[in-house]
Image 1 (cartoon, one colour):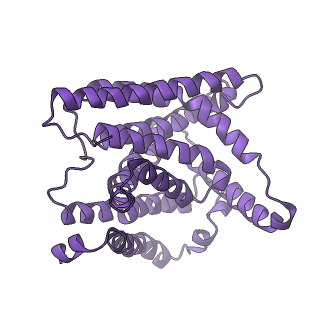
Image 2 (cartoon, rainbow, N blue to C red):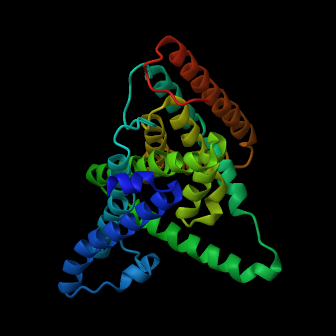
Image 3 (cartoon, rainbow, N blue to C red):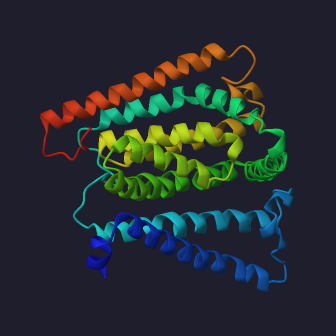
Length: 315
């Protein structure tokens, strides 16, 4: 079976992996929902998670556990199957630190510095309006966004350091690993096999990465981040860089929310770059992002010349 999948067209392989992901996800979600349903609590909130408003409701814990199961089933299991198919393929090694410590440090600082730009793009994206003839679609999008925002706020409601740690695992660590092994570690290499051009593979993957989240008022900044993660993975030859970037991006949101909640920092920090008069921050953030990616590219080329035995993707 492995050889049959390996010899199949990359799009057939991708379709098979997506099917594996959905089947795995539904099995794992069932493992969470069935006991809860049998307890008599009901699962009506699943069809409308935005209706959950109390962070202490049992439904919130169930939704968080479901999010973990979704990440494992939809992303991690297909990646494991992909690596089983391509046992000897070292494209985008899972964790490869050799000769890359400088890249890791630079990329981490770059993602932190990119926050004002991401916030600026998010504000610009959310202000876009569709033509009047498409008002129904726009209302649907904004309704979905409002529900998602409400649920995120419930998830980010934290009363203790334990809540903070759990949310860092749920919102930062798990997505950083699960989404990157699937999008940059599985989807991007398969698209590259078809497109034969890494820029196309990176941007198509970034588009699908953003589309998957189904939050269209933040589509552009999420796609930009996806592309940044894609270039970092391709040039460095390891998934460690995009995982760290993803972790920092999501983790900062959790940590900033925590400090705002305990009145340790101003709320304006959460939207730095999008606040009135912050345009300069966004501009400087753009420059740092470009400089950081450029540094990673040239570092990868130097590493490739000095140590050709170390796996680095062709530019």
